[in-house]
Image 1 (tube, rainbow over the protein chains, first blue to last red):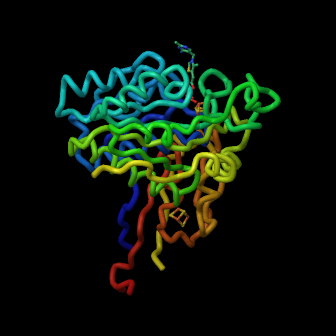
Image 2 (tube, rainbow over the protein chains, first blue to last red):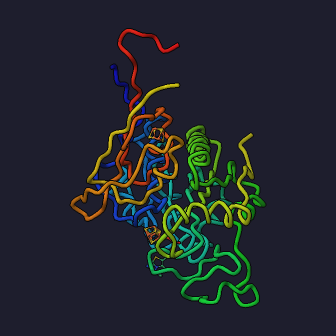
Image 3 (tube, chains in turn orange, brown):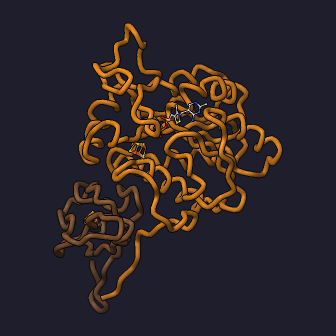
Length: 247
Length: 77
Ligand SMILES: Cc1ncc(C[n+]2csc(CCOP(=O)(O)OP(=O)(O)O)c2C)c(N)n1
Ligand code: SF4
Ligand code: SF4
């Protein structure tokens, strides 16, 4: 029998166990980013900006030069890095608490300036790291520690759809929403990440990939149930698609 | 149909079960072993893997490697 290896850990991923909870799809998103960095052969010139949130230790897992930004400020740090080192490939990786709550100003203005960076936005509809508080993306009726009876739109408004909002701006080049709920979506998510990095490399402008992701721990679900919940409840509320595409 | 097998990095596995659910051929299960972190790693418990990679694509911890198997002499056409 001849054996051919057809799947292995990407080279730019560091060979350690992550601190993520079992079944948390942050790990899937990390692997996709590392696969794309390998395939585009950009490891040496890529710079990551990690957020505050569960993915704060991104730099322990993806083997590229990295910053760790103050909460929500990753797009500002990424903007500065890209302007000073225009040949680098700069991406931020941010949760929904980080990007859509405390960091709302930074993301909107970086997008509006058309910074030539890539923003990877992990939307898991909750604050993971701090123990499951309501996020701007929490679904109506979804329970969180700060809305134990479920999000009430009369008190807390409705889930913010970041892609749709940023797509109203003129400057951004590529805006898309993908999911990692099931392998069939994950394959598409990787294509989107590839296109986002290519958009930056080709100097076409700001690229934004929202990845719908699970938080089994704070959703209070088994990992498989969490991927089903993501598909059944989050994906209708946050439709997948391309909202802006480079000329 | 292609033939395959998976390799399991047992110490990395967290028993989340996403690969077990993703496998169309149902050849994976959570084993009875226990790794150093206290998790029960996944195992391929029977033949029938078709090397589709769905398990590896869904794994958040890069636990799995997938191999395609080919007979040395026979061509697979
Ligand atoms: C200035 C500041 N305010 C608040 C916090 C507390 N804090 C840490 S992580 C976090 C939110 C994390 O949620 P999210 O961005 O959705 O990421 P996840 O953990 O779900 O991946 C908050 C509010 C902080 N570290 N710094
Ligand atoms: S708390 Fe949620 S987002 Fe954070 S590692 Fe655990 S499952 Fe993932
Ligand atoms: S490669 Fe496909 S058939 Fe083989 S174990 Fe993985 S999911 Fe199952």
